[in-house]
Image (cartoon, rainbow, N blue to C red; front, side, top):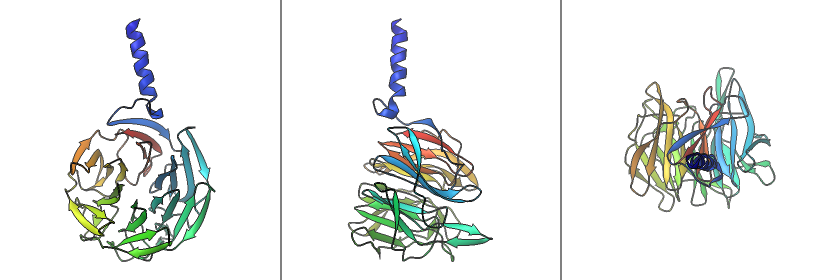
Length: 311
């Protein structure tokens, strides 16, 4: 009888991990399916304790915005993104505002690219247009926030890949060009913010080769610093996110093969460590957002499943 009681308590403890009572470590857990169709190349972010998924492609282009409330365990469709429906957009969050822009779509066999940016306010469930990205239209760019600013760069425009880097100041609603990336141009990189700094690595370069180099950008000094190379298979279109002082890279497309591994970069030790493999099917063009120290990871080409990662 005592053993049965202990077993039940263990199950209850594990079942309550989403509510933050006790959590496993370095564990993947199936969460459920996204309420929309399978969706590739969406842009995702967290803000105000809720997760958001915007746009993407699934046999057509979407401008839907979905909000996940973990306290009620409910998805709610919110105000539609007012720009042209698109995939491969970039985003960053500053305070209680999210900024979404760039991206592209195929229309009549022609690739349309965008440089417009829009600000979403969850408190009023409304969008408003802000200044366009001066660096020009592109898809597959990097978008990050750090030190109270938004940063956007890299990606693919009508002539090839880019390596420019732009800072958005919410106080003035203006963009400013900052230190250009010192390595080769690239697109579809993995990226995350940790503390007040930005981290960018991998992706596809101008020679259509996949990269493993990894860099830190410091807004305080406006400088890029090369860090230890990514030790996993070189890749593009991976899923990436930051939790605390660790950045994570999951799955992605590498040398014609879809990866299913998970890697973390430890800022304090300045090293990469391989973690538990992604429990879902390997994929490209997926998304992630982080709530209460837990990553919600999934979607991607032909997928609508979502998984929790407990670091």
